[in-house]
Image (cartoon, rainbow, N blue to C red; front, top):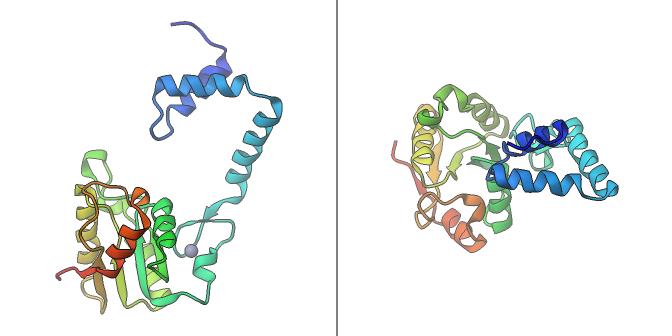
Length: 201
Ligand SMILES: [Zn+2]
């Protein structure tokens, strides 16, 4: 193997950890960055360093935020009776953009997946329960993808919440199997929220 400069090798190594980036793409991006104007490199450094300094997770919904409590959790114009559970911040954005939901959110980050060593203790249900109690939620809408992991996590959450006086619902069917919520069009999400169905307890 051709030996690159240490810094470029380190950059390639870091880039291969990004989602969807294989070794060839990592190499291409690393050389692009190395060869780009100083201003571009500076801006990249600035934005990454400000993300690591000022972006944290909201104490209630765990979405990324510049504040301890994010603007969605602080907003007085949201419906406290319903909370939407999503896998990741991108899904929250997709649901928000659909215009079909005005309640509260909770971001899980992990879906149950024993194959990938993601176990029940890695899914933060305690945080969800705190958010439910904080807002006085009556309905929990599980907006997780239609996949083995999404199904297992929905069942796990509804099982953990079954003794509480809550209605647990899920998005209507019609979402593509295995499809990431973030890539589904707004109209489909809107209809899936409107047609949401209770999960049998
Ligand atoms: Zn929040």
